[in-house]
Length: 106
Image (tube, rainbow, N blue to C red; front, side, top):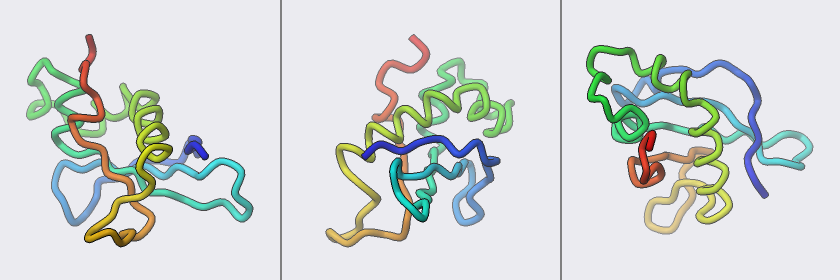
């Protein structure tokens, strides 16, 4: 099942600098299953290849490309599910890297 937007606010992941987290839900779940999508610094750089990430807050990049982040998260969730370590699911988290945005803005 795909992930769907919640429209809830993004936040900075407190444990990793430059990670932006936004909540999404697994479509068709009742009660809703919330997945915390984490956009890494590398994924934000892939979304903003101008190199201005250091001069712009990560929220600015993420807000401007929220739809692309959500679309990539839903596609990755459909293919791979939640993050895993050693084959075990790690919480309700899905982490996006630069490879999840191969074409940048192009």
